[in-house]
Length: 341
Image (tube, rainbow, N blue to C red; front, side, top):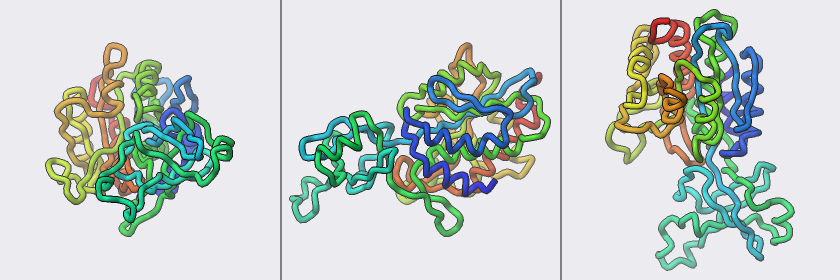
C-alpha cells in the first residue's frame, strides 16, 4: 500500500474523540486485506488480529484513532454557536479558523477585527468566549447542528516540499498508519506472537478505549505508538535535538519496560533503522500509562513518531518516520521479543 495515500485518507476522516466512526471506517478499509479478523467493542475500539493467532504469547499494538475538536454547548438567538474543547485543542490557533461538522457543515470562529480592537483583545480568547458563525439564522443552524455535536478543523492534508505531510489529526493517524503498515509487513509470515492491533478511542479526552481494550486483550506485552515533539523554532531542551526523518523515538520512562526498550534500540542498531531516544521522567502522557497498569500489569514499550506543531490544524510529519516505526515494531515481533518464552 502507498503510505502517503493511507495517511491522507486517515487524516481526512472526521473522528473526534468519542465519535470515531468515520475514522474507524477509513482504518478498517486498509486493515481488512492484511488481517486475520476485524472486530470492535462497546467503547469504539477497532481490533485487528495478525501474526500467529495460535501463539502462546500475545502482543498488543496500540495507536489511538481519535482526534481533537470542539463540542457544541449552546446556540444563541442570533445563530452563533458556543463551543468547548473536546481534547487538548490549542486555543491560540482558533481565531478565524474554519471548522466543520461530521456532515461537512462549515463555520468560522468569531474574531474581533483589528479595526475595532483597542489592543486589549490581542491575546487569544479563552474557550469560554469562543463562538462560531455558520452564516445562518438560529432556526437554520438548529436544523443542521444540535447541542453535543462535535466539530473539527476543515483543513485538507497536503504534501510539503521534501516529502513531508501537513494535516490536522496526524496526532495520531500517523500512528494508526504505522500499525496498518505493520500488519502489511506481518501478513502471511510466521512469528511467535498473536498480534492484536488496537486502534483505540477517546485517548484525547480520557484514555477510555485503551484502558478497557487492554483489559479485554490481556496481552503479555504491549507497544504503544503515538506522536511526540520534534524540533522547530523556539523549542529548546531535549526536543530541540529531535528531527523529522531521523527515525522513531524509543521511549525511556519509569512506567515503560526497560528490557523492551533496550531490545528495540538493539534491533534498530543491528538492522540500520534510524531511531532517536525520548527520556521521560514520569508519565508518558500516552495510552502507555493506562495499558501498563491494566490487570496485574502489562510490560509496555512506547515508540513515538516525531511531529511538529502538535494539536493544531497544521501538524507536520515525514512518512519515512512512519515506515521506520513499522519496520522497528515488525522486527521486534519477528525476533520473538525481549523475553524468553
